[in-house]
Image 1 (tube, rainbow, N blue to C red):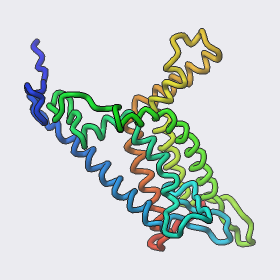
Image 2: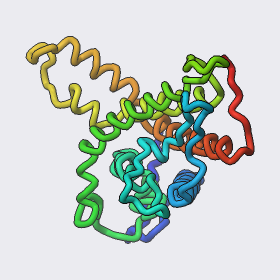
Image 3: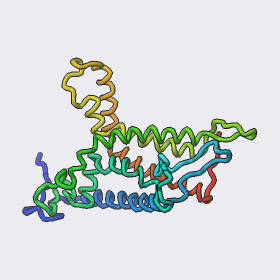
Image 4: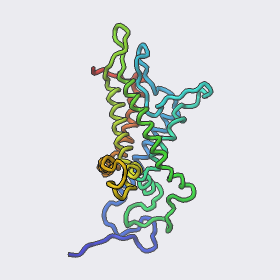
Length: 262
């Protein structure tokens, strides 16, 4: 049985290939998806309004994940968005992510556009020069883990309501569920990270030869299982964090009401 193997055309001209399938659909969809999110997130970050819903009596609140933790020091000018103080951390985590590097290298830099498709340059220019900062991914991972705890605390605050007699009571609203789903999906994306997989066991040649080897092996196996769907978690969590901000925005603007379920 013969096997057909697609290859880039001689000379590596951009877009030249023997492939007969619609190889360009993936890079195009990636470019559009990332582009829509970047435009929306940038607008919301600089808009500096309608990002928090404070409940009566100060019992609890809904806070957009784009603004969490909410930092408003006295020296900060009124026109400066608090989101700018914190978005560099989760943004840096995604920007340096191994999967997202592949995604935007292909979608925006055509480096390469797809497998067996010619690219506009002859040499790899990945993590060199200005892109050397991408090697900081592990440190952005540490920050991402801290942000997960902060976003989890936002869910707790979103589950606090004021009772008729003025007491703070537990409750669940649609907003509570939205923020809970957001931190859950962000957790799946973070815990499936390649760097985390390396840290918990990828650098170990013999689990039975290290301290807590069985525990580390189980942890490594769990992260590995999540890592198999890292691309899926990356996209779902990306749009979920955008939807969570959009929901808070709509409630804060009065366009919709945060319905209490419990």
